Length: 178
Image (cartoon, one colour):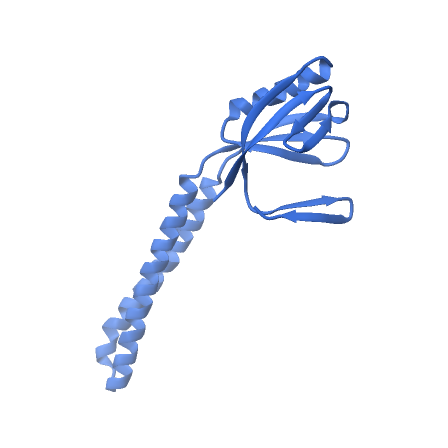
């Protein structure tokens, strides 16, 4: 699950501010909006593979339960029956978990990221659910590069996914837990 915060994005005196991060406009080589779409096809593939495995486990469990009374010893019969029932319950639980995971991916939102490229590596500066807003930010950045008098300010709901690790050159300079 992603966390969000409202970030102040502004262009003032030839500097793009994204929260507390500053990008001098003269150093920006490129700004782009990218679409982050959940990989639903891969989720379906993983789900179908898992379901086939769980069905095979379930079939083996049913065969074990059916064969249990045919064993010559009572202990062996009871053990095989218990193992078969346990495997059947396990297959059912794994099927339910796989279905929940599939539903989570299928219902996941599409996000849009603002990526700023400077002379170094590209920086993902913002992630939002509003693609039009991100595209408008790209237009405003490019307009400000062309016209030094351009001023702009916008509040944006920024989404975070996992930890953010900041690395400059060969040195890890910190990890922000979100």
